[in-house]
Amino acid sequence: AAGTEGPLQVQRVDATSATAERDRYALEQDLRGALHNNEFELRYQPQIDAASGRVIGAEALLRWHNPMRGMVSPGLFIPVLESAGLIEEVGLWVLNAACREARSWHRLGQGPLTVAVNVSAHQLDRPDIHTLIKRTLERHSLRAGLLEIELTESAAAADVGRAERLFETLHGLGIHIAIDDFGTGFSSLSALRVLAFDKIKIDRQFVTEVEHRRDSQAICQSIIALARGLGIRVLAEGVERQEEYLWLRRHGCSEFQGYYFSPPLGGTEFQSFVCNSAPLRDRLVLDARQVQ
Ligand code: C2E
Ligand code: MG
Ligand code: MG
Ligand code: MG
Image (tube, rainbow, N blue to C red):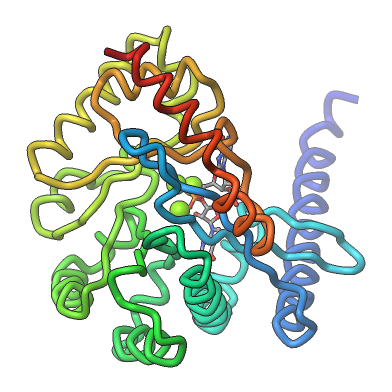
């Protein structure tokens, strides 16, 4: 029996990877039809400024609902869009839908609301990316200052020289750029020195249980100090509990996003959230007494 174990194992590994290969191919095929079949949708997760207690905008998050598969997680399908060369087209769809939605927030009369759009490294490869962004803003008459681009460290660091020029162009238009999932990549600090980010988003992994984790506390305090030193904003993402929020607020973080405030919402739901955010504002003002 011992003699057959080796070959059998190899066979099993091969079968597994062949299945994985087939699954991935099927996923890719389904994704190819998704845009045309209207299977994509955006959700908007509110972003809150604690000092004023106001909703200051939302992050647009892509959702894929396939009739056969149901809801598929972006963590699963975004990498496939990227490797299949589909992210450019889908990314453009996201940008367009997000800008259209953000323009419709004007009529809520609740002050400026920004929309944050996640952009993959592959989308930055396009030499005319800034033109596409500019045109999209113009198409929807959305002020550039209301658009924020979220890039991960690795996306920005893929070609720093190019990113630097792109940042200049985007800033020239008035667009803001946030560094997403900060601290999870490999080149955070050097990227921050070359690239003029407007905001740091602290990754959820440092936020979870921060109020009783010394390591997370040290990391969050450093990131907050870093943002302050650079003169840029800092937002904590994935805040799920009041304790996390209060700890971060006490330590100088001013902007928040997470289930504690709201999950990602459909467009209409987001608008009601904004219009009915007075109780939230009151709650945050009350919290302010606790942190002082
Ligand atoms: P991200 O940009 O870091 O987005 C934050 C993720 O955290 C979202 O996951 C959001 O739903 C989730 N989240 C927010 N608050 C909480 C919380 O309190 N607790 C927990 N556990 N999770 C929370 P989602 O929507 O599944 O997206 C995952 C990732 O997929 C995003 O991470 C982003 O990197 C990528 N992604 C989503 N939409 C797009 C898109 O339109 N384009 C590109 N290129 N990437 C996208
Ligand atoms: Mg993001
Ligand atoms: Mg993030
Ligand atoms: Mg993430």
